[in-house]
View: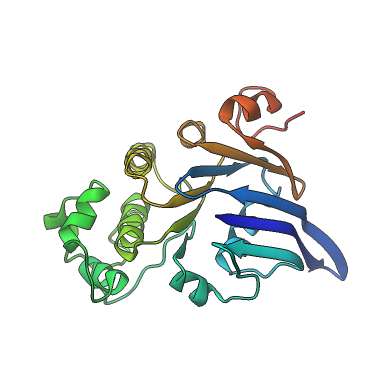
Length: 236
């Protein structure tokens, strides 16, 4: 279980303190699919980076599987099984897809590199020896990143707006990958998103605005808080 206790995050904004997160408390059970949603600038991505260890909260505690990880580095959290996927996947010059999958899996590789690619709907023959460079599209990179996450065997994986910068065809394939991961209950997944198709497959939604948790619950409980037809719109 992941538990956030009274998390606040304050940054310096031209000499003035700016509250990004304000006293956020959450409990996220194991083996569930969570979507953190809400308006732009509400603190969603900052919260994700605090969970991953990229940002350090100004105050509060983060408890993971009974251990206080508040002061742990991103590396130490990764060793505990927490993974983070950036909006723009990193390109590694000179390394192939196979290289990264083998590095992620370590010595005890539970499946072949080809199997991991198949998990995310990519033909191993076409991708296994491809270099991670500009020849790969944003959608291809994100699916490869998910394959790497599967190979790493993370217990908790955080995706920051995985739909950003990819076309509709790639987005549809990405949704299929997430649906398959959910069916296989491959650990807990947290996705930062306001896309309806991602929201629809969540077990629980967490609505954040102005740095505060408005509500945590099912889609049926959360969506009436939105107004209009856009998932990016302001809510009541």
